[in-house]
Structure formats: C-alpha cells, structure tokens
Length: 305
Image (cartoon, rainbow, N blue to C red; front, side):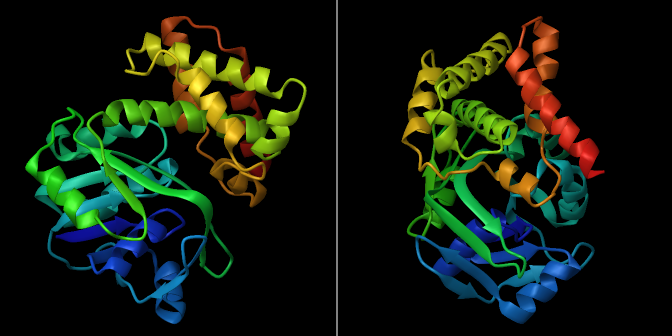
C-alpha cells in the first residue's frame, strides 16, 4: 500500500518516519522549504524510543503522482483547507483518509470533501516538536495512533491497515470505538491545552497548586457537559479518569499548543475551544472557565498579529 503523509512536521514526520523506517512505501507532501531541509539533512528523528535519520520520498503540490491508497492528514487545523486542496489530485475513489488532527470539527469538512465512506476516524497521543533545523524531537513515552471505521466495524480495509502498521517503532491500534476515542481525546487535549496556556506552565505545577486540580476537574466537567448535550458517546466517569491521568503525567509535560505559544506560532483556539463554545451557545450551557481559556488564547492571537 502506498501512503501519502500531508506534511513532514512534528506529528506527520514522526509517524510517517516510523512507517518509512519499517519499510512502508511512504511519501511526504511538503512545501519547498521543508523539501530542501529533507534533501540536505534527511528526516531526522531524535526520540526517547530511538533516533533515526531517513531518506524520504517527497512530493510538492502540483507535481504528478498516481493515486495513493492511504492519505494521512497530520497538519494543524488552521491549514486544513489548504491541505485538502493540495492533496485532492492524489486521492482516488478508494483512497482511505486517515486524519490525526486534534478536535472534531474537521470530520465534517473531510466527510464533505472526500465522502463519509472514505474517511476513517483517527487520533494520536505524542509530545513532539520541530527544532529550528527541522529535527523532530520526540520526548513522551506515548507515541500512539488509534484508527478505525466510524461505525466500529472490523472491515477488511482497516485490518489491512492494521497489518501495514504492525511492528513499526510506534504503536498503532485498531479501535472498535474510534468515535468515543476521539471525543475522549478532544476532552483531554482541550482541557490540557487550555490550562497550560492559561497559566503558562506545564501540568506538574498546575496539579500541585492549591486550586489546580479543582480547576482542572471543573473545566473537564464543563466541556463534558457540552459534549453530552451534543450527543457525543463519552463515558460517564471520563472527567475523573482524565484528571487521574493528568496527575500521573510527567510534571514537565506541556501541551503542543503551549509549545506553539512559546514559539510565537498560531494556535488552534477556534478549532478546539471555539468549536465547543459554539456548541455551548447552541445548547444554552454555561461555560465560564472555557470562556476564560478561549479569551486568553484570542488575546494571544491579537498580540501575535
């Protein structure tokens, strides 16, 4: 199977690189600057799970190529429209779309553009970033991808993907409840990114502070109440489970959004927190903490501009 990874950044470069390391036929759809970096230095991964330097095949938007069997979207949500436009020429009638974006708002967009039957559910858990030279720095015990049919069926095509992804130096899991997995991650990442950017601190000091765990649980409950009103299939006790997980994380753990803020990059405020606030307004749910988180992010965006 031929795999096209949209981008070769911190997420796509890492998981695509691990597949390439295994011997999978992987191509990276990249821009000119990243293409030059990869040609000059290779795809460099420095990871707690092992370092590697790879020689990737690259493709730039507009270049000729046959349809791919799988397209993995690993870009930031604010680049989604652009990424869809660039990848369209390489998508055939049977091409599987596997998104690894945060949040849920992108699913409706991908369903409209590629057909609901061609889009799988997907998510990843990883802490990774690019340094100034384009090296992928991966620092978390987790380097996991979950994927599956939206219906939960164990179809031949997802079983084929499971076989393709097996035995590489990253963990790929075929899920029978990918919709629930994605909503659970959305709850986790929106809370985690929200508090770490609001307090400009990693998770350890936040949890250790006098009011930290109370604030975390309150924000988790606010967001979960919005999700339940929307009909999201989340577990009854997911808020407590997520709080327990946050307390167990390495104290220095930061969200990717916090790392982006520290670098002066754009953030996914509208895609993550903003989308939930739209739903809260629709269902008339009060979310003061979520509003504070979002307001902080929008002030950051205004100052950045």
